[in-house]
Length: 155
Image (tube, rainbow, N blue to C red; front, side, top):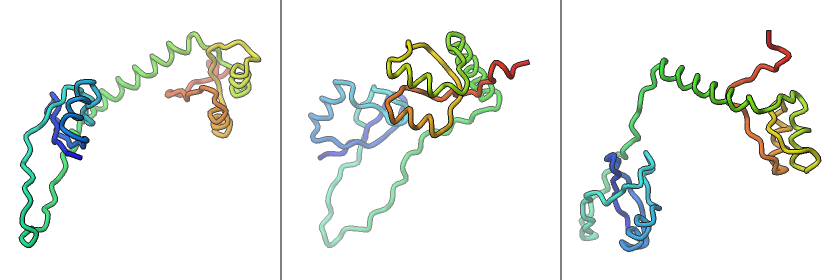
C-alpha cells in the first residue's frame, strides 16, 4: 500500500491510500478519485515530504500533525431564510400534482405497492411506526421536508 497527499483544483489537500502508483493513476483516469471536502474530481498529487526512516535507536516520538478542516462557511439569516423559502416553494410545486390522502397514507401506499391500486403521487400523514413498516416492506416513501397543512385545516 502507498499513501499519497492529494490536492483538488480548489486547493483542498487530503490523504488517500492506493495499492500502487499505477492504481492511483488508473482510478484517477476513470474518475474514481474525488475530493472528500468538495467532491471535485480534478485531483492530482500534492507535494509531500519524503518518508525516510531513521535508525531504530534514534527515532524521535511522533509529533501530531493537525488535519486540515473543511472551511466553515458562515450562513447569514437572510441566506437561511432564502434557502428555506426555495425548499418550501419546490415542495409546494411538487405537491400540486399529488393527492392529499390524510391518515390513509400508509394504507394507500401499501395498496399501490401491492398492485391493488394504481400508482399515483400521494401525500398524507402516518405515524413513525407506520413509516418504518412501509420502508421495511420495501414501499418507497419519503418524508416531506416542510410541514404541510391538511386541506381541511386551511382558512
